[in-house]
Image (cartoon, rainbow, N blue to C red; front, side, top):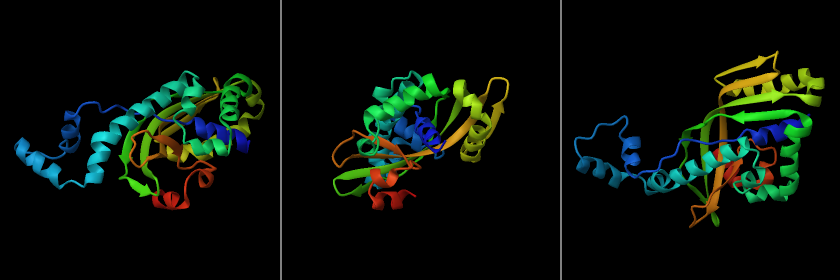
Length: 226
């Protein structure tokens, strides 16, 4: 049951709306602030922390695109493409092939099928530089529907208890529909840590609550974002 819940946790993935225009930056920053003219806005931008400026203008659009792909790939069962977005250090703990097989078996043999909604980023940290890499924390919410079938129905009560205790406190609302053996989570809160090389915008991700995170990320990075 512990391994099953771990695999399920990996499948609770993410996407978000994309920021794909330079003018969106002004919309983001000025949504709650009123500038009398562009000069005033530019003065504010000049005072902005360069680290934060890079996150908003360069990194956020890339992560938004990646997370949207991640969600779509998961829903379409394209697990090989999902792996391309994972932190590669994860595969030193569980091989890429083993993880793909586990995810495929979860739906076809075990009887757990997940449908992800469109998660929305609620917060993104500034960059934390450590050795040759840079890291940031992304918090997001998203709906999740999980349908139980097959052999899992034999232990549905135990499974239900485990899933509810783990995920319902992190959801805006939760319900279990007995007639269809379906879990519904609304606005499930999740956190991921992105990692990229110092001079790169090519990010790879791992969930903050991953059971093997101490084997995937440096302790200093974990402590920074815990």
